[in-house]
Length: 265
Image 1 (tube, rainbow, N blue to C red):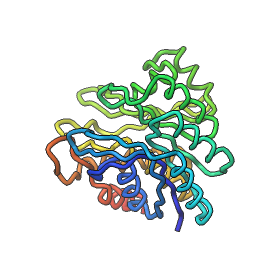
Image 2 (cartoon, one colour; image 1 turned 60 degrees about the vertical axis):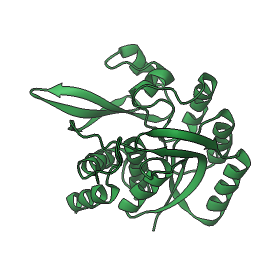
Image 3 (spheres, rainbow, N blue to C red; image 1 turned 180 degrees about the vertical axis):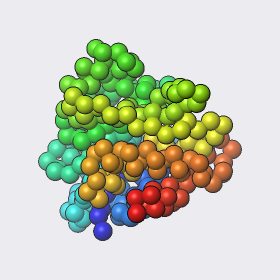
């Protein structure tokens, strides 16, 4: 069984962060290991408390996992501070495995979760990762991305890693599509699913998307295949959400994995 490591924050409600990553790994039949960076008290309505883990303990977790398991891929999520970013960067420098980095620092609503200097420091990870998966706001902050804006596209093409920019809502004829765009070297690839309207079950979709990509890379899929599978996985999991919580509910990871597996068979 392939082992995939997630380095991310904990979500006490189980819908996002480490918990969503492990559920995504399980949905694709890989074994999930974890390194906790931040503890949060949260639910579907928001985050009430954040408690960062010490960098010494983050390093101890990394050493424990990597010294015992042959890790086939890594997903990185919320890093929270300069010190944690530095610690993770040092840990992944010498690794030769696919690494998917979801730079969690601006929410879907546009609220900033990290300081400006930490956001700048985050860029130092790019040369050590395979793919980054920012939302539109994060892409704007990291490299000035604007949709269909040539200068910002040139900046993306110059990055040392591939990029998937998530969640454009685009109109096609009489309906909308949810579009993710991947930039790899000088190539651009678009992945889309029907836009899901009137469904509030989107808690942890970004975490689940990036961890699904990492799981499929561990299974030997190409980057393009992994992104396409992850896009479909999240779409199915939203549509089969368990309808729990008073706010933005979690998705159903198991059902997403089952349906993706059936379609690949």
